[in-house]
Length: 216
Image (cartoon, rainbow, N blue to C red; front, side, top):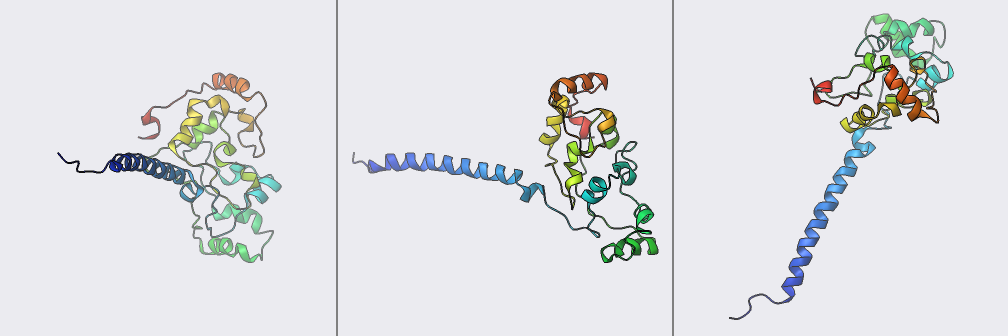
């Protein structure tokens, strides 16, 4: 019986199969890299706000405590945003004619809230409680990054589940003394793991990883 396909088709079929595998692998890697890129996660991307609020100036240079503006962070699941009255406590006395603060003055005059844009927004199917993390010695900068260096606020972490689980699996790498939770300039000690294990035991921190902890 005559041969239907030329012998070269053996090589061509192998090249086609291996090539297809390489293309699929490369495509998968590209999608994975894209999912971790700032373009998708919005890390380091500054989002437009009604007022260009600077944490570097307020928290960094002036040393204003996080709780002055985010007053509910120790007792609520939400850190909260300050009412305009909080801003006007200072800005009724200083920078009273600054053009960039006109939205703040208008908000105060009209008794309307400023429409701030959420920077660290979790999906609706994820439950997160600020108060429990604060009470267990997890600092603001652990999740929000070096906030005191941010002239304009941006997202420091991916907010992916794997990002959260990294801390939940090894809390000793991130826990700090409760007295340092709101220290915007805190740096972990050289013996973080050793001291962290002691704090994990002292604060009774549990490595919670069950789905129902965050997905309720």
